[in-house]
Image 1 (cartoon, rainbow, N blue to C red):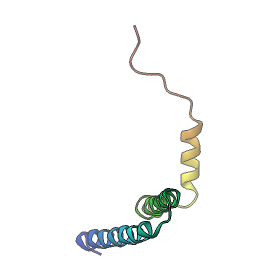
Image 2: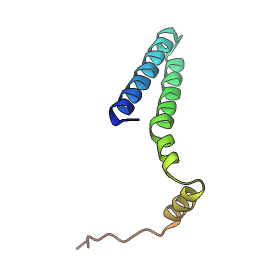
Image 3: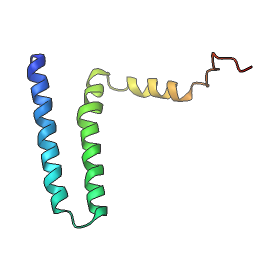
Image 4: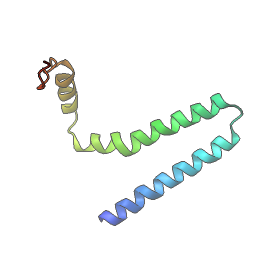
Length: 83
């Protein structure tokens, strides 16, 4: 798949998802329902456009070790000395 085709595919998917959200928001009964719909949409978009591509690039299991090592690493001292 060429870069232009990939960009077009991502743009089309994003536009379709946003249009579907707009239709659901128009049918929402109150602000709480609208906020829940927006949260679900944001979660799905994050998964589709950020998390999935990252997961495809990283081998299964390796991210857990890297994330755990990063999380458990002791804080690094600041390079800037306070005077």
